Length: 135
Image 1: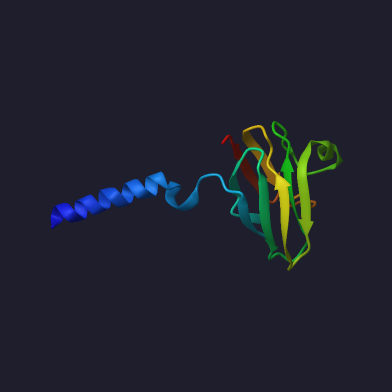
Image 2 (image 1 turned 120 degrees about the vertical axis):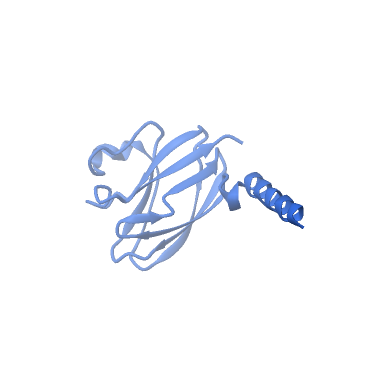
């Protein structure tokens, strides 16, 4: 009987490893909640060049942005006019609302900064990471 349970534990571990522990691989559907001052989750892995459906919910008390910066660029202090040319994709959502948006993931694999561009929100920690992987 002991061998049975050991075998079952090994099989379960293998299944979890092979499935990425419940979907940790690239996704084309993202669900993100925004509050003061965070994205939940704050890290997203998507396949390069694919259409991505983004379900946003703003549980905060103010409008929030979801901005993806171009690869190799990051906001330094706070989002400003000088950062606008480096925006890959952007949307905003009013407080207490939700919406579904679609964008095409960058074709170049790598890491892309995600942030809220509302004054002071980046500095308060409303930042995340988009990880683009090749398929």
